[in-house]
Image (cartoon, rainbow, N blue to C red; front, side, top):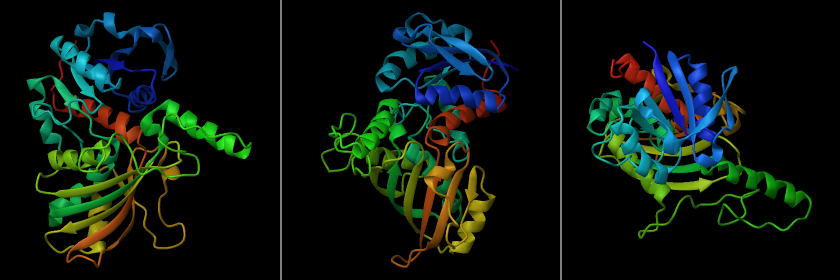
Amino acid sequence: MGLNVAVVGATGNVGREMLSILDELKLPINKIAAVASRRSLGREVSFGDKVIKCQALDSFDFSEYDIALMSAGGAVSKEWSPKIAAQGCVVIDNSSQWRMDPDVPLVVPEVNPEALEGFSKKNIIANPNCSTIQMVVALKPLHDAAKIKRVVVATYQSTSGKGKEAMDELWTQTKGIFTNQEIKPQNFTKQIAFNCIPHIDSFLDDGATKEEQKMTDETKKILDPSIKVIATCVRVPTFVGHGEAVNIEFENPITDLEATNLLNQASGIEVVDERDDGGYCTIVECVGEYDTFVSRIRKDPTVENGLAMWIVSDNLRKGAALNAVQIAQLMLDKGLLGNK
């Protein structure tokens, strides 16, 4: 059975990745459409060896499509996802708009595929935050084995998580430093080149940022509401790929060797942990890959049942586009999509 798929926000970083991954995974597609704002009308994007022109969101007929992969931001999704869903087209949304809606499944296929069963309430499925996705993929097999009580995570998030303009700013500032130009932050609160900024998204009353709160709330919804999570989210001067230093406290004993064996057997994970110089995966090395990479697995002696580890993943792929396409594939496999 073939699918009719519309990619909304097709000219953005994630939209382009969605088109690439749809082609790479060879989903059975009858018809593909690139959809964007009216200012991108007619703009060309690539789908495999084909070039397709963008159509305008405000005049596009979604009734002929099975799935809309939405990556156009929260405000656009808030307005358009219900309208698209009402036309019988399932929306898989990459923004934060619907993630905590109790009637909208928040899905990572390797972690909670059963959550898809509730998608028909609104015909919308939410894609989790990029930093949450890679963490819960690694946490899931460990939680099943020893039950996680508490997670402490510090993220190292690339500029692509904030969009193309943010990536351009890193490039411009980097060049500017070498040519003695004045550095004027525009997309960030401080200089991003050769710097780390412990601030992603806006601040909340308790001193956390929205990005940090997303990691807490989404982990609870996806994995287990009893897990306690504290995150510090940091923007770093890389273009693509997120890293995370994670400390986990378990209810039951688990050794680093047991954890390594479990992660080695888990879907979507590759363990790179040689305990030697270079025997770990860095952010640069995960770019372009589908898997989430786990390294530096070791005992945390500061708590009774604790482990520490390092997790990296391509935030544009598994952290966004790939996860959305995998949700579509899962729906197809489960027979949840009709052929239009």
